[in-house]
Image (tube, rainbow, N blue to C red; front, side, top):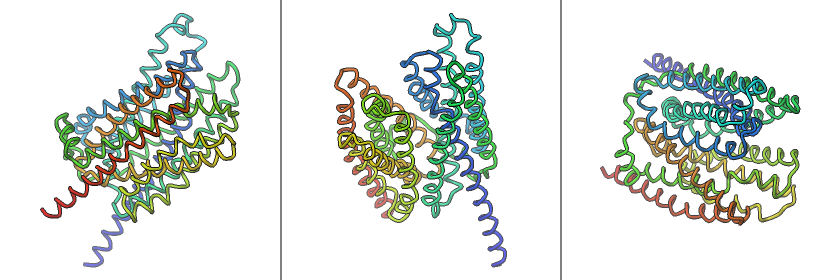
Length: 430
């Protein structure tokens, strides 16, 4: 009997190791794609001469549209009735959308002038990017629900902390690789550089999709998941602990987004950093976040994701005010490193708590609603920050407004803690 039990345990461990391997490699390839391709889509829009307004809108409106479509993606998931096929084929289709972007870069000079200078080219690029985000974001809740069923609770914090650390390194590698490729192409040849990096991003995502397809299909399929309805969503916002979590996360990212989109222009325009200094600042943030993640994972495993979430929420307040402390470059590197640590704490705690406050059955619904609301509030936050800048108040007031808004998130996380304690007490008494 013991031999049969041990054999079953060995098979389970083997399946788990295989899933963790594919999960890690899939994530690494995905982040290479983001770093070398996705992160530079706004720069590509500028390179095509479509203007700064289009470059700004291409990273806000398509993401917002994609987040809303998450609410309807569950119908397709239920029809497919396979997490693995849904996310893998979605990743493959997302990869293919880099090819028309590469084609536009290659044939740009052959495009008639009236099309290049008119709105048609911008509409085509906008449509491609919108499809890219619709497909990508639609698969996110399904992937999180699937991986939550495949990765046991006992190793979740430690595994995802280590995985996210490597993912940060992969994203940084992609960013540096993009710069290296474009450095080989100067002047009019820069568009050929964009074509090259988009093709590399496509290949990386195709291999990522292959690893997604190698996941083990959970025995508890998507048709058992709770359906997304507006009434159900509204009820959870009013009463459920996961509803309080959705509100808190959406508000926290709204408050952060008041300042976050304007940090890079601030470093380049106000601090007047050189290209090398700017790259060092980006690298310091990624290193800070990446180095912090394993320790954050161990802390969350020991003390719980909620306590980690509170620490992260408090840390976000001074993170945006550090720009008032000094203009010494060495000190700014250190502060940027600390900012990466704080964001590592917050992002990982949000990720882990999304599992702790949901059940496998309602996870797709809750995460879809969170994604839709989250992107809506982030867009609103960026518009507020832009309005402050347009009014001529300067970057300092943007950072102060963001810090004040972040401070108001603390009562929300306290209310979340009370709601979860009450729900746990009620479940215990029942």
